[in-house]
Length: 299
Image (cartoon, rainbow, N blue to C red):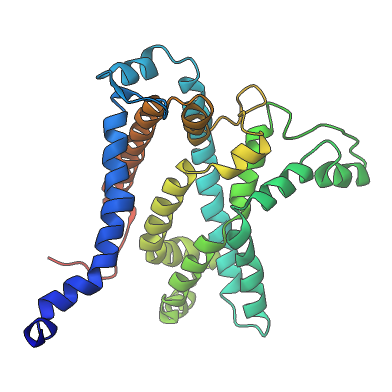
């Protein structure tokens, strides 16, 4: 027993075993199971029936909803991610100023990111953009009389979700703020001596120095945008309406799995999403060699 207690390798295995077991049981096994189910007809009630590539053929050749979900999802990602990063950087630069209340301001701007993905906030957003919501009340107050339900209007429904995503910029803001703190002030002072104005300092100093942080935030927010589910589910009541204008890919996957009980087909949808997100992440990293600048580089 003393020899076992003194064995450093055994001690390491004991302390890492909770993570290893948790990874194997709750991550690796479900992932491999979903890969198997993606080649089967599985409804949660009966044993899976092997179909081969039929689910994938159905997805790209027979499913008339999949194209719409791709369109909605890519529109959401391409609009929400840049807007969120732009607002986050803008607010971070404002908060990168030493004032007495800067701590309070940082907490206030970060708060939406803590509660932004909750069901309560999605319900609140539904009320704000309803036909008698806060947005219409404000427009009526300034003389623009309207009773349009922004969520119920097919041309604006998706943009309400994009607005909610943009509002949740707090996590990116904190990361940008940390990056701004690490930029030496000497660079700005030298640029000021050379006569560079604020715009030139921003594009020639701030953006290049923040490019690794931008890469990090861009990657995380892109992956997060593809995973967006709760706001679309709550605001559209799980239907993706109106006229499928808020039918995000994740919502469509959920409907196939837990409304239609087509778990095999839903697993195939999930793996296609994984491949798309993986490809886009790889594309972002490959492109980073052209626009990301590091202060020091190895040989």
